[in-house]
Amino acid sequence: MARGNQREKAREKNQKNQKNQKKQPKKKEEGTTFKKRAESDAEIMRQKQQKALEKKTEGGTS
Image (cartoon, rainbow, N blue to C red):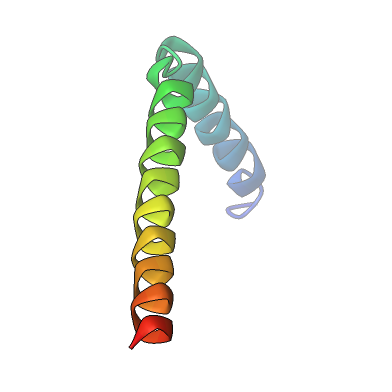
């Protein structure tokens, strides 16, 4: 049969891909970049809250 080896070819291809993924080192920086991103987002939110508070107090005293 000409069509019988399709499954075997796909299995071989998947095994090759999995083997290549295991060889690649894991990214250790991923956690630190997440922390940096969270800190920068928090700083941006603090600035926005400060601006909103200033605007609120400025509008209330006028």
